[in-house]
Image (cartoon, rainbow, N blue to C red; front, side, top):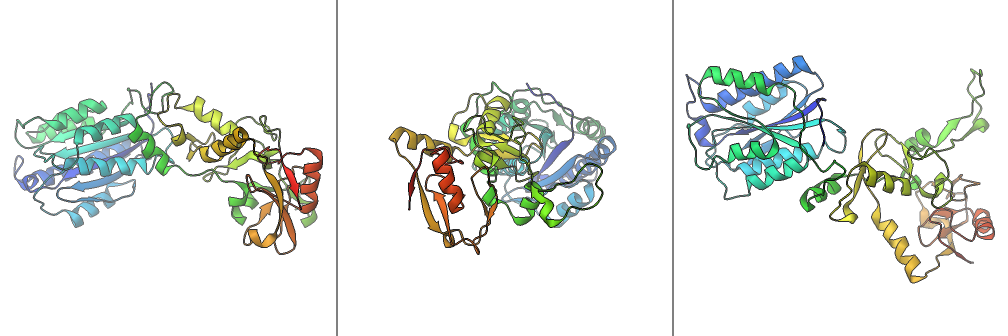
Length: 414
């Protein structure tokens, strides 16, 4: 069960249907009371934690959003004043969906942040489009708390807004006076604790909807050949400096770093027995390194033990918590090849087939860049597309009879 009081991402969801332009209490309408609450809550939360972030969703007949997280109330208020307009209907499900999507878009990065939605409405909503209760259940699965601040009539049919707050473990406030509003603002500005199980708890079974959402936004781990020149410089190349040597090494002294997996702390993959350049991957966000097999085990132990669809498994970087896909397609294809008894061939191909790429030789004893402008021909495994210098490919076949990258038994074809 997750429990946290860390920094928060909070999305305000403000109803701007025609009923919200009616008087609330005193001389202001419900919209202005809602905007007062938004600005006051943000300013109070800044006093508690300046790292908290905010977004705003406006919903009625259509749904609009600032669509980015900001740290102060100025941009939120400016966006609201420029985009508020009287609308006939109040489609709550669309507003909640936009708010959940705003948070999901950040879940690739946020790690252990607490995620909140604050719904501000008079409760006079339509349910012809979408189901607000289903959206609340999705929010709960993602660990999103939905608080409600309601104005308007004392009683409303069904009170879906209260049900939404109850489902997600949020609080429900009905303000019928300025004193009620100020009390609600004080309470809503306080930090939250997640006290219900989410998809990130180990024994929690994913729902298909939530799992699909998370997989859709997750990034692909980078293979060596996916890296830009700048990323290669950062992740692969290092300067060989002697202890106490303050001078920059010469160009000849520049060399490849010995890359190690940040999960098993080894250069060699324990499953395939190849070097890092065999099954190594990089985090697109921080360039942390890990073996493919280690990432699979990490994903199993880290979060989802009961996965509805194994093809949609995700995991977070051990270093920066960046959300990534487990590349099941490659794993499953290799498994199919094994079952069918296929033997991938190491095929000699002209370098023009990899034009525009700076690839690294998969032979662990070489691991040097193959320059397509200088290399007349290369060897390429037709199972995983890893490449070798001609001499390195022949040496690999002679010594191991397996591809150093995917560990499949190979035949050598001229």
